[in-house]
Length: 130
Image 1 (tube, rainbow, N blue to C red):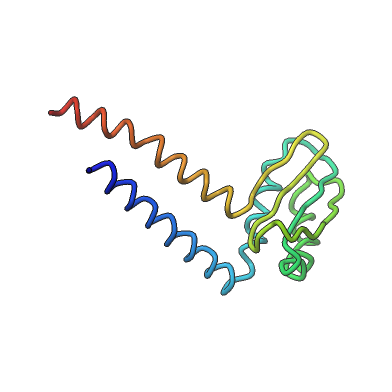
Image 2 (cartoon, rainbow, N blue to C red; image 1 turned 90 degrees about the vertical axis):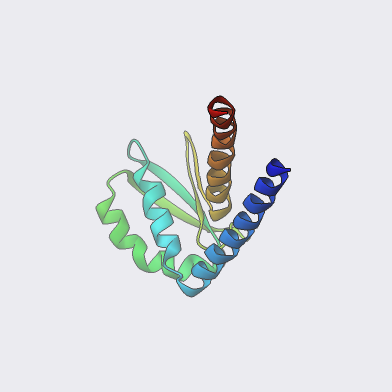
């Protein structure tokens, strides 16, 4: 019963966090620029990059991209593409060697996976304490 309650609380927290995140993105369209800067900073070597963004984020990205490129020497060329499947605030950075998924959904998935991965440890710690 405790496990079911814990799972319900986690699902509720996830739903609330997701809604709050998306509302924040609606109120602050600069979120995509932070996501893009962090993803581009992960590039290991100078390379050509394709960035997929939500069409609604394009004006914001285009306004900051020149300054961002000056600061980041790892980008030889950036091609920005609009993808309706990428939600607002997120982006996907692709190079010839791989891709960085900086979509909001993927980040939420990573948070949930981290939380779930720590849950069995807590159970085993509780059992050991009893």
